[in-house]
Length: 321
Image (tube, rainbow, N blue to C red):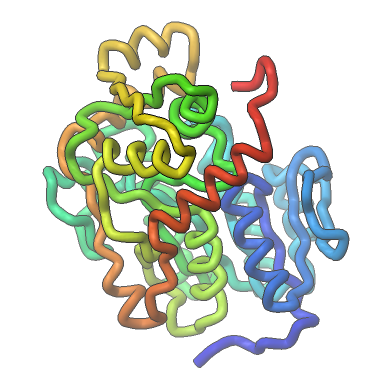
């Protein structure tokens, strides 16, 4: 059974980063009324019909006001990577409180940290949570809290999980890959770049989250979103250079270099504990989603073409990180 497809439905998105933007684009295609929430109230390239509101998502009273009348709310917001343990749980709790007060449905973005080290096994939704990192334990506690709230009848929630992102607007990975490659320099992977590693194309993730939000039968469950067939980091970057039209220049950054980088860059420091993802095969099984809703994953070469075109059109700004 699906939700009402009335175009007058209000859909509220917390977070205007790459995933929030992808959710917005998918909802606009469906003719939905969209409100996006961030700290500035501004969003470059947002369609005129989309409302962008400045607010503090840590304030439950404000999240209640912002989600009043909403059919579905999408939790795509997050604090700075190095602030997750302290700031992420209260951020999500505030959004949950607002959504609960208005009896809306909640779609939540998650990654795969709560599983811990899969030791090369493909990850499935029924894997136990063996988180052994600070950020993994934070994700585990947040996910368990969401499912407990759903089971208690407090809220209707569905979780969509993705692997490492790439695609338009995702600048974190671009600083080591797309931008150097476009400048004729070396692109840099992480850890062992010759083992299989699943990547999630951000527009595919956005579409999957909207699909989950549309289906009542999806709620109360975790879903791995569809991804293109898994490749190695070396294969990924080789396809990137091929799309750019230059010879591959590919390197890798190990744990030692991450530690050194972490002396100056908090994000690099926080990546050290996650290096297990890049030392052995890290693959995601998405058959549950595909069997229920179909496979809309974009072929990786097509996704690479779209990504390179976007980064060419949006050159890195001087002083940007």
